[in-house]
Length: 253
Image: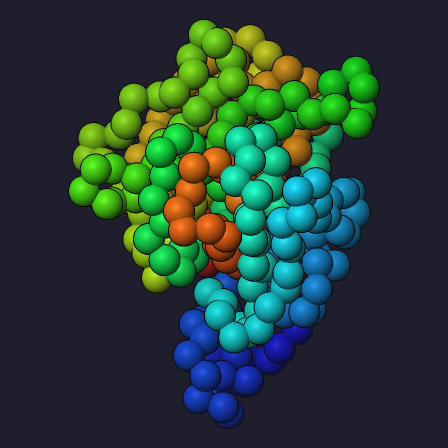
């Protein structure tokens, strides 16, 4: 891992590159990835995870030059405009407690959407381990004025789309932003989902079913239809799974 110099990586200090401070994650983090290996090895490490190939040909690339910290990020390119499939990466846990899931996103342009643009999924494996049960999604949608907003969709017909938060959680364009989610998996009404956008609480949904099984497949992704312009591109960086909040400053608290 790159040595730190007063909170900045040596590569940035020497070259003058505009990379931000690296995460100081503390001891409550169970897993993290800053992609400074230049590949997906942090995502594929035990107990399990890796790329989610897009059957329609979307791309999953670790690229240099645009990152939240350090020098590398994941670039997800969705070119097929499909409702259920698109490129992504995942981490899988079996029988986890209530945990926080954090990842930074970057939208290079103000894409417009008619229906949902899914950028994160919580799923579990079914009796057939090759089949995943869809549980909860974090989606983007464009308002008539062109603003991009974040909302929650449950595949459980008892809940479906949660009401849009007030104040409206606008997502920035051409700037890195963090989504951190507290996810309590439960097949009864003890489940919970709490969503923070750049450290601000935007959704707090409790007393609901959130999963159909004991394993959790967490998937930051780029899935959607009716997105313009195409291909739709987003970037991911600095992901973490933790027992307590990481927060926008990258320090558990």
